[in-house]
Amino acid sequence: MTDAIHRLASFVHDLSWSELPEEVRHACKRQILDAVTTVVAAHRIPGGVIAARTGVALAGRGGGDATIIGMSDKVPPYCAAFANSQMSISLDLTSNLLWSQGLAGIVIFTALALGEERGASGRQVLEAIACGFEVAARVKLALPPEINRDLTHELILHWTIFGAAASSAKMLGLDPEAIVNCLAMTGVHAPPANRTFFAKGTVVLSKYGPLMGNMAATALSAAMLAREGFTGDPNILDDNDGYYRSVGTRLHDRDALTEGLGRRWWILESQFKRYPAGTHNQQALHTIARLVTDHQIAPQSIRAIEIWRPIGTEQAFGTAQVTNYIMAQFSLPYQVGAVVAGIPQRSWSTALNDPLVTKIAENVQLRRDEAAIAELKHSMENDASLSPWSLKTRVKLTADGHDLEKWSEYGRVTDQELKEKFRHYAADIFAPKQIDGTIEAAFNFENLENVRTATSLWSRAIETKVS
Image 1 (cartoon, rainbow, N blue to C red):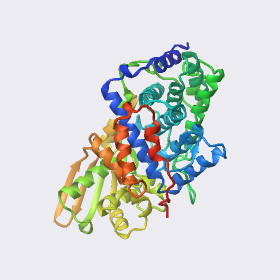
Image 2: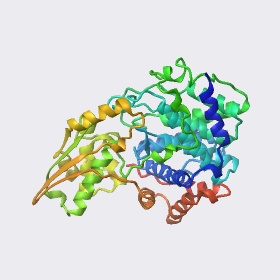
Image 3: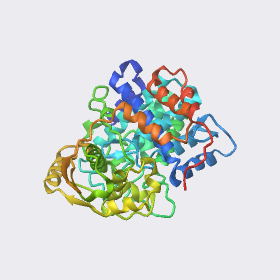
Image 4: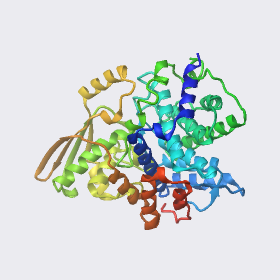
C-alpha cells in the first residue's frame, strides 16, 4: 500500500536535467523571475516588511549563507525560506496552479536557500523546482474534484507543502528512502483547511496569515531531519487514515499520485497574474484594461461597469469599500477602479482613498452568470484538473458615447510581460543594474555555476516603501 510515495521519491531522486523537456526548463525559469517579483513587491506593504524582519530576527546572531530578498543580512536557509515564502504570498501576485497560489514561493525559496548554502548550480535548483511542482500537483489531484472550488468559503493550500518537501529533498541529495521519510514527515504537519476567509487586524501578514512561511520552513526542516535518519509513516499518502483524513477529506484517486510522472508536467499548467488580485479577478481586469485602452475611454466618462461571472460576486469580492491592503486584493470593484483610473499596480495597496478610484468602484456591478455557474458545477464534479483560468467573464462598460461589451481573453503571460512586471515592482527598490542582472540571470539560470551569482543581486538594505 506504500507504492505511491516510493514512486514519488524515486522520481525526485532520479530526475536529471537531461530528462527535463525544454518547455519545462523554461517554465521553471519563468517561475523564478515571477517569484522574485512577488517578494520585491512585498517590501511595499506591512505584511511583507514584517516577514522580512522576522526572518532576520529568527537567525539571531548566528549569521548564515542564505538571502532574504531585499535585506542585507545573511541568514540560515530555514530563515530565508520562511521569510521569502511568506513574502511571496503577501500581495496575491503569485502564480496559480490547480486553484491555489503559494506553491511557487515555497518550492523556489526552499530550493534557493539550500542552494545558496551548498553553492549549488542553477541546473540543480531548476531540477528541484520541477520536482516540487510535480509532486505537489499530484497530491492535490488525488483529492476529491470538488475540493477547493468554492473560493469564497474555503481556502485549502495545505497540499503545496509537499512541493517544498520535494524541492528541499532534491537539493539535499537525499536517497530514495530518505525522500520517503521527508515527504511523510512533511505530510504530518500539513496545515488543516483554513475556513477563515481572510485575516483581520490593523496589520496582517497576508490573507493566509503566516501559513506559507511556516510550511516552507517545516518542509525544509523535514528534509534535514530525514538526512539525519528521522523516519515517517510511508502509508501517509496511500492510507485514508493518513494525510487526506488529517486535512478533513479523503483519498479520491490513488492513481493520480503517480500517473504521468516524467511525462505529464503540471508546471506547464501554472499561470501567472498580471494584477495583484485574486485569480478569478484577473480576467475581468485584463478585459476592462483592454477596453479602456483600445477605445481611449476617459475615466471620468464611465457611468457603469457590469461584470458577469460564475463565482466571486458577493462578500469581499463585491464590496466597493476597502479599508486595508488585504481587502484591496479581493475587491473587484476597487481593482476595476484602480485599472480605469490608471493607478500603477505597485500603488494599489496605498490608493485606498483615491476619490476617482472610489467613484468608479461605486459604479461597478457584479452579476451571477447562471449558465456559467451550471457549467462550473458540472466541471467540478467531473474534472479534478479544472483550471480557474478557464472561467470566462463578460464585461459591459457604459461611458459617454460608448456602450461596449466583451468576453474575457486572458491569454498566456509572455516572457516580456514577466520582465516588465519585475521592472515595475522593483523600480526604486533595486538599482537598474540589479534589475537587469536579475532578469538576465533568471532566463539563463541553467548556466549559473553557482546560484549565488543570482542571489547576490538581491541582498541589500532598502528603505521600505510602506506608508
